[in-house]
Image (cartoon, rainbow, N blue to C red; front, side, top):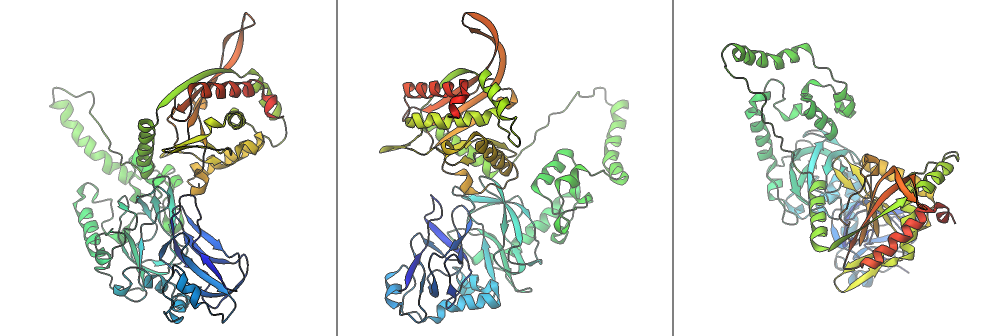
Length: 553
């Protein structure tokens, strides 16, 4: 009997999905575990596998189209089986449509991969054959606009499926955006450094030589539109012409575009290096961080840059009676998508959640001895932060009211423990999440934190690795900070701020001795956590840290 396949919910915030690519076409045999399609969710593009076996009888959502969760995606059954009643009852095109319309897009995809997707776009009727309009993707659940950090292809370049088109800066990270189409890059709708709303025209791909003038202007999706390709090219030419200060060193046409990673550009800017003088060692001559760091300016460039200074210095000593001791200098740095989101989220948290703070001082002498003993085990590396995370996970199980979320009509008490670990990155702060932290050993926590922190700094974190936290730990102790307060990472109800371990005089049993202590500050949302509840949590946390053997029981 035929089985309906509906649009799956592939993330906790997903309400609709877009079929990026069908990997099966109508009439193909499908086995359990086969990948049916690639589904673009609100967080990432993910492979969707079949849990059924049979023949793919019907495709309800063509490539490039978006539909709500639970809409009819496909039907799998026996070859030749009558499915007209199932189609009529599903959230799919009418059953009266000839079956051929379901196979046409996938057949055309086999012969010309770029054509199928264009037929499913809103402007399909006005697009030349084989032309695809690529829009600004939604790469995170909170992304409303994106910034093109770097174009890795230029107009006229050949594009293959899977090629990286550009690096897109979202509100959470800079991510590589790959093409799901093949052809020639005919037009670029959003220039490097420019921001545009999700679904704005990013680029146009199609057969070489196709006239696409006016397509970007007429093509609209979700109310967003961008200037026509011709106008964009004129703007670039005008900008290059007017930039007289760099006219000798900067390329003036789009064919001489400088390809460099965002980090390489920033380093070059900080050092005052002109990227056009650097030969890139990366793919397609792309300039990398190491290229900039290892660059030595030539004598000719040095003379060009030094001559104006020499000319200006001669009249200074002989004519001017007064030489200023310095000059004012400012720099305007455009806010990244991550920085904008941090500002919005933290402002919402501090102004909507009534924060209060509780601070305790914890003796860490036993923790230091235990850590030293644990790290004598081969291939084992446990940090003090790992011990704090483990202690928090165990304390949260004993005090679930701290492990909560506020909602207008209810308080959600989480009986699972997912601890977010704040990690500083180049553009701001990300919070990867350790799922089911209470079930992890100290060494497992250490390995997971190291792996996630590495991904965060390399901008390789997936959206799924940053969601679902129930409590957060922020540690600035490694920077020598004694104590500090943090803003709650909503929808959590609390966040723990961890200071440095300090050697200091302490009083024990009436005697002044040398001890090692650490300051912990718990920020609580007073809507969900009362003062006594937070205090009891900290007491339990102190017991675990001052007696680490109890965490190993």
